Length: 317
Image (tube, rainbow, N blue to C red; front, top):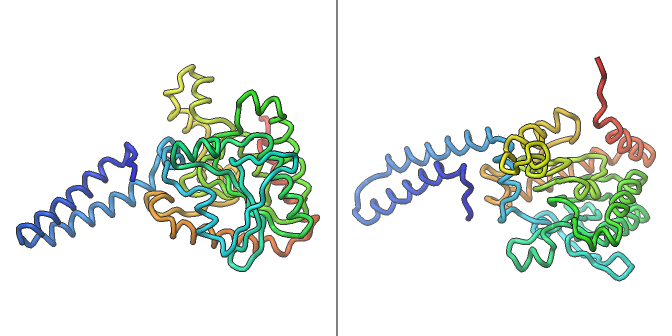
């Protein structure tokens, strides 16, 4: 498993434990007390480390190459998942995947951005950066869910919409704008979950929801910290300062009423325990759907609209 720079002190303790176990096995010496002491030290340090992460450190976890992606979650949380392809104009963007799902007996339309874990996969999924045809595919599935009165769940993990010329030529801006407008008008409950990176309009094109949740070590922002640092300081290496100023973490965004809740991750991040992460996400989805179940179509639309209208409101003194 890839080790992040700030995790090195923890790795040193764990290596020491393995060394003591090897010495004990080879020499027959009783080192159980020493091993137990180091294990307790490692557990205490691990809990302290991951409960006090800086925004720039959470950023690293959110981008971890072994973090669960959309297709991983379909296996972890779904009893059944049937993928639906294409935008019905001849294109099928693999950066956005969606289909019919059964989650704990609840039928939903599950849609999300997909990243790869290898160079080959990232090329197939365009590094999780959707093109216009991806947003149009998502829109088609939104309409399908609305027609058959199915709740919608979106899982968002993208560094942003694809910024290439081909995307601009085929209407990237209007594709995202139409999704924002149409999601606001849907009559079914919508839950959006930021599972890793939630960056710019690329994330918002799937994120107009009644409830927006974030995984504990994900981030959600109008611009990447590197992009922000490049603009403000002409120096992308100051991304840590930008990450602090942007308020990109779940804790900050809940206080600012931008998102509605946080889903706990296993200690060390979602990539350390897929099963636990899947259980936590499944419970959050079912609990939130239950919470929204009593709302009428009009109440769902109004609540969704009001959530986003009040963002950025301020009072001049």
